[in-house]
Image (tube, helix red, strand yellow):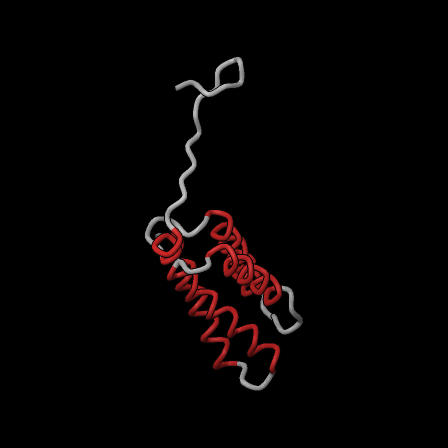
Length: 120
């Protein structure tokens, strides 16, 4: 939950601040909208795998776009892309809307004996 909180707030902040800074370019506005919306969905834990992957792709597009002038901004967006991709692979967690809607899925890894069958 803390990772979702940190990444969600950072992505929402960057999306909203860039949205008001780049009014006019339709591609930049769409990218900022995807960034802010993805942050809201990640913060809530709704559609975490889909929105995490979409936000990671969007962050990489922002980082490697021609409009990105400062190398420090590029590194921030690459870092956020890695974090959102990690959240997409990790899943929503116990305290999320996905867990409430679809139930919590837990995998139990059991010890294996030499015969390949799990011991009880």
